Image (cartoon, rainbow, N blue to C red; front, side, top):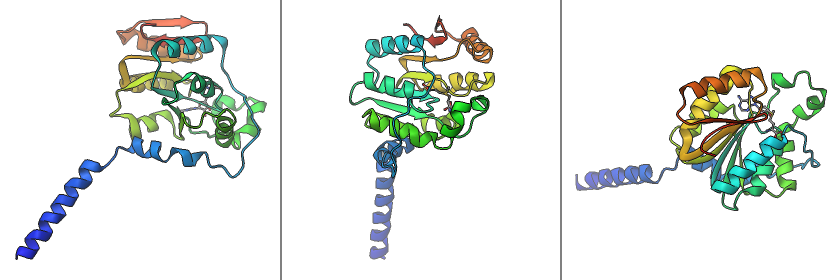
Length: 226
Ligand SMILES: C[S@@+](CC[C@H](N)C(=O)[O-])C[C@H]1O[C@@H](n2cnc3c(N)ncnc32)[C@H](O)[C@@H]1O
């Protein structure tokens, strides 16, 4: 009887220990991240993308001002904007790049994307290797809302979010409404393509119900104090 009691106690102790040491799913991703860049073939550098001067100057302004430790990019493609930000971030910062890297309807009529779409993810990883930013970049190969639901519902310390994923009105609206919940109190949420009617409608819908002010610079929009 005593032996059974001892076994029971040990089992309970071990299960408690297991709960207290279990790590959150996002930590698992971070822990295994370096393996993602172990490619069997590294593509030549290919910095094809969409990243305008207004986006560059404002993202640089934010990074210089707040020195963000945790950054999210939604819509990465081959990494032009991600690599730009990664180079400005401090060495211990983390930039989560969220993109399913699968064929996407906005690119149907862009011949320059068709060949690249066959291996866009591997080209993005290769670009990160060429630019020596793999230690700061954490790719998450999912649609943004799925990534949010899988890994970020408990996260509230993101400093900067840059949205350049799906440009459909409801997707942009859902991205802003979900992802802004992960921001730290001083965090900034911003994005590209304010010139697209669908993006503009979504951003203005958020502005109507938002306490923070909407700012526009050319095609770039943001909510925050900067
Ligand atoms: C305009 S490109 C991004 C350009 C990139 N920021 C640059 O600097 O070149 C849009 C990207 O959004 C991605 N995307 C489309 N729908 C998405 C979604 N629901 N969640 C995350 N990414 C998405 C596409 O796969 C594509 O790579």
